[in-house]
Length: 85
Image (cartoon, rainbow, N blue to C red; front, side, top):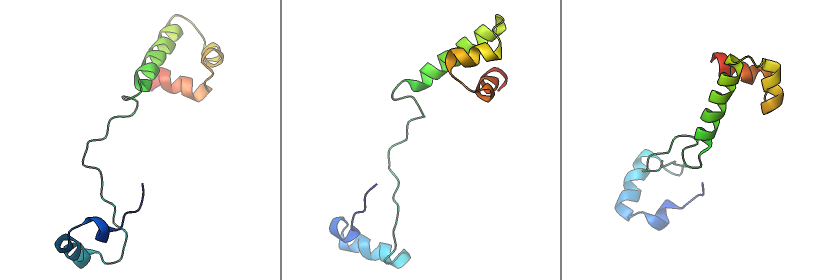
């Protein structure tokens, strides 16, 4: 996020109106476009969903938590969250 001087881009009328509410302070204006959900743009959401389903399947088939930890390089608590969460 970068700083833009409002006097350089806003019409004088709008600038004066804004100054009645906030004068000389920093104002954040959020984007007008809707933000995409986490992981939808690059496919990581799908990757982790598939990985977690595979971990659950392997556990149901008899793999231990320790085995899954080593196989996927995850902490014990992370495997537990995937299995029981």
